[in-house]
Image (cartoon, rainbow, N blue to C red):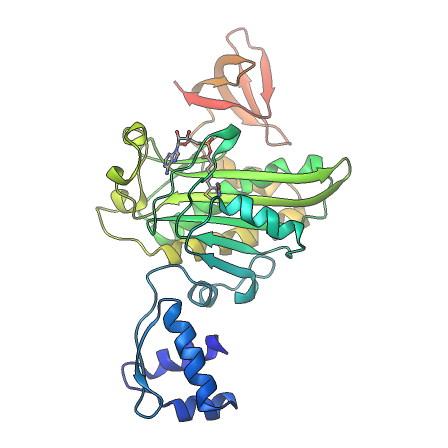
Length: 327
Ligand code: BT5
């Protein structure tokens, strides 16, 4: 019902719309309309007026909220309606909370977004700095009907979706994907992806795709250690503020399309799209983990999404994980 109230108020804007006519349209009492308006005000909608004189929608919330996000989506698997979207003020980590929701049976396509993360997570125990109201911190719950060994392309898919979503809203920016899933603008990181899987030998329980993007983040809101290496969409957009809702919606839209393509056609289209937006292949790289370090030229992705690096003697090694530095 809230969705319809928002739509009616927006259509009538800037004129007031009476509680009476909304009540008639919705087939409910004026008191019910009033209660729903109160709930919307709590979510951050600035709505002035009274049941008698009519209500005016002055402003939509600054924060990302389910109805505004959902209104921009035409998705099938990911957030097909607003009830799949959960927007919270503050969480430890959207990935962690969505895992708990998954354990309690949340359906595929559930999306969790937070204005701020107290303990945003990167890969391998690292952290993701998540200042309040500035970035997009979102996680998507998937329950793909695939054997667990088929899922690593989903990490690449998430990076492609984030890259395409940014380009849709800001066509003048061209983020490049550093293997496997960092997005860089002018060599600085603006986005990271963390995918986490719960599976048995031959059954996936769920996969959480977490995406963090610096949108309107300024460098002084990030820890000093990141100020030389990070950037945000606003900083790369000549300082002009960027709508977080539009970027989040574009990412979910691309994610939905790519995910359905992946389920129908397999990994090849994901690898092609990743390849066309990457800044890793053809470069001299160092790839490291706690157990190895190897230098060579990044040549291609193999069918599983592993990075193939050619060493000085022409030997080709396949890396399923690791930290890449472009030399
Ligand atoms: C990542 O890890 O880049 C994955 C980040 C995923 C964050 C999302 S937010 C929503 C969801 N919920 C979560 O809890 N996490 C996901 P990694 O490749 O390990 O990179 C981590 C490194 O990036 C850190 O060690 C820093 O060097 C750097 N970093 C941290 N915060 C950053 C930021 N805001 N901007 C740029 N770089 C950052």
